[in-house]
Length: 481
Image: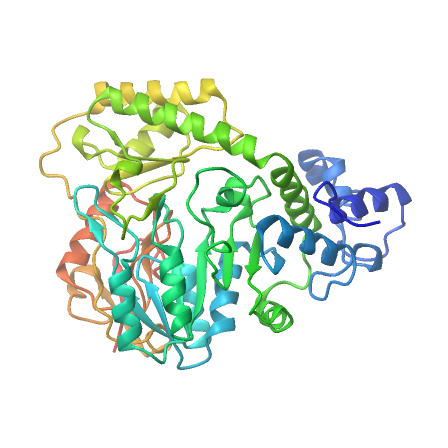
């Protein structure tokens, strides 16, 4: 009997396995939860009973031949890909795998500088050389946009030996580049197109969303199913077009991915794919409806600016993801991170992130209309209680870096630790970033400038969660000797 999207092979195999009541003399050592009752009480017996080891009836993620292989085939069909792999190391693992597939030591890769840290980490691992396309910047909002086609063409012409072009689709804020045109140009020059689609799962299943990586003809895409797709945190898909050698890709993935894949993550991917394949259109229509309503109500408060498709310029903002609720906060005299903290501390509302000038509330089918109303009401009260003049607020969110050394050489170079204030003019050998969104302010190999130091101090002062440095307090930076 053939499989269809109504099937969930891993989930079905786990249910069958649970009914068999097999006596476990294998790992994990909690033995279906009996060996750790406090954890079982917390997570539930149903959960613990399927936290099991790879075995013949349940297949093996490192070398799937049965139910995992079937589930991956169904995922590929649902996403319109030639092949799809289940990833249990998050989209970080997927991004790193596609870069390590495309690039060997010394190979060039063209990418926007506002990539997630996972992409630059991949360069440290495989010793590829980044050719950064500095994205356009919306100076009012202080956010990095997409890559303009002209900038990509220039980078390709100046680096005809580059192996691949990496594109964010969409950015954290919901902004998309002209992915189809960039893909056509890159392919015409013999380069692979890799797409970080961490925030674009819903593009594949909803209506009127920006073009997907697979529909644009891209070669590989990393999709965070756990973000808008409903699976468990840390579970993702790696999608491949027809020109990609899936067997070699599996070998690349197995260089770093665990040999003990969690069946909780695998089954969540399987069930979530089934759900979206069968009901995604309705699910994301509802999500968009809530986002559009929230955007309209927040804009009517005054001061805030919840932006949308009106930003589209046909190039560096080729399209916009209307399910994203991105809001500019500086006109009410508060940094995005301050609104983020106030929402949590004063109103018990946890949004996705806040940066210097913006916040992002992640809306999904799991939200309810009354939750949206509560968010709108809280933002109105924050303006009334805490709002002030926007004069003197730092507006520039994105700073174009000066690359002095490759990430790998800088990361492993001899280094010394200097006070932040005394590091200007030196080459950084570590990351500095606000997380989320995890886009580096500084990456290994980049020149530290007075402007960057001012930005780091301002972000710290406003309460941004800063990560990446060896010094936990971000008072010292490691620089190349």
